[in-house]
Length: 452
Ligand code: GLU
Image (cartoon, rainbow, N blue to C red; front, side):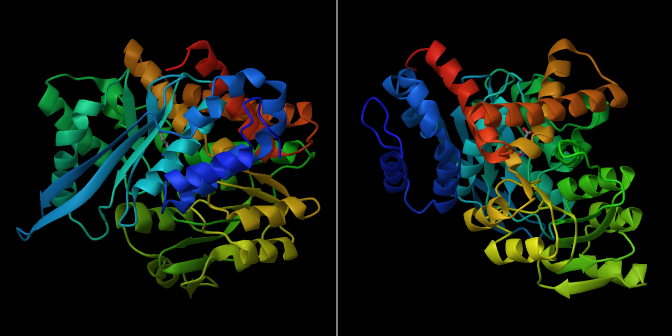
């Protein structure tokens, strides 16, 4: 483990982060992952250590936690906890989604915000890193309940956000419907149509084309680059994704378009295996329109489709695995099963879906390429940044133009990861490449902006 010129060992810093942020294991994990490959970089740049860049990076610039009381359809009052963490603004306004999920804690939001700093840096765009969320469970809630909750949340959040300050968007549990309610309340309170205050808006009123598809499409574009680096492509390959939300559905769509057969996905009911290839229209109807479960897919699809209740989809043999559900959903045993079944490419669509142990299995296996989410799922936030550009100039780009730019961005992130890894003597190491490249861009900006 390397030592900085101020005598701070990376292990000491990680221990310090753990002690100062008790009960936040996911945040510790995210910090460990980013810091692990930085030893040689810090040795080459003693100025970073003198300026305490790392110590500043692991401490959010600001954290706001607030109460959100709201009334359900029966007239019962509920109290939720919401938060917004502005992690780093060296490269631009805080940028990152809002997550609504009953398990959300400050530790969850801090891990996501920390990841977001480096992901956003990798896009090459002018966005800092932030994240927010609430322990609200949207499952089974009516549109009216979701609207009242979003309005109650924005009644406090509005004072902390703005197009040049902090720009929230969606994440798990927050999509176009929620962004619409949040935007409406922001506009109502402030009296300003500040389109650039939120991204992921409807395409008819300031939202970017391709934003809905961007994370899933971008993931598959990134996987395509990984395959191309070893003279392969997606045509004829079998793919398994996890999840059945926004990221997964559009990853399935793009993978199918590029000639792959997607044979599995999952939701909270279990793992769906459809050896003939998923019927995406049926899946979209059930998941997006009816907000139903995968059991309904099996009933309506017939054939050989089956649901393994409560299981993860990682036992289904595939060439390419795309974990798109949630953090730490793929563990060491899952990784071993995938490798044993011949998987040669794993690219993360969710944030931190593979445990550290699972990543170690992929990295140790011969011929397996593994990409961390901060590189492979950056397409969503990249198109959010495109949305900010369009809002600032009151312009609207076509679907084709935006999709073209998304493809270019993913190609550039891929190149940046590979080049950076190679420069540090680590061929084909996407983990080191992504973390080092993201870190260098943020560190340079922080250094230039002084001790703030
Ligand atoms: N929640 C997404 C992510 O994890 C997108 C955030 C955004 O568009 O601001 O990157």
